[in-house]
Amino acid sequence: MHDRYQFISRKYGIPQVDLDLVDIATDVLALVPSGVAQALRAIPVIRHGGTLIVAMEEPTDTAAIDQLRTVTGHAIEVFAVPEGQFPAALQRLYPS
Image (cartoon, rainbow, N blue to C red; front, top):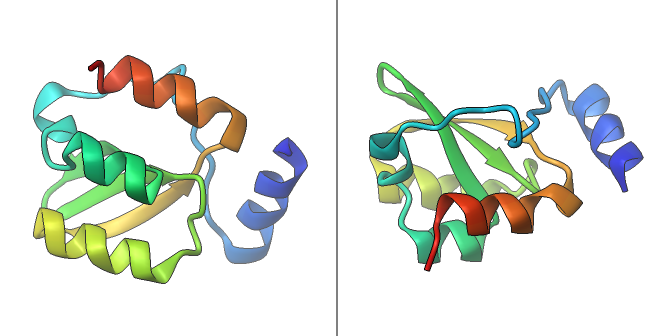
């Protein structure tokens, strides 16, 4: 599955992010509620001015990106995250 994300990254010019290596601020996580993060398979990583960088399992999902833009009020830049890494990161970052 990891090869799929490398392919997406190269083909669409979408950078990859390893969520195990990123320290995400609490105020950035709060921009995307847990339910939205789960439904859209998206985790906010960093806010830079009016842009929110979001790690997504499906970084080419334009409907999800539009929804994130609406929910957060920020421009969205996406990074690819390997599918196998996402569930553990979601649980770690949005504990129940």
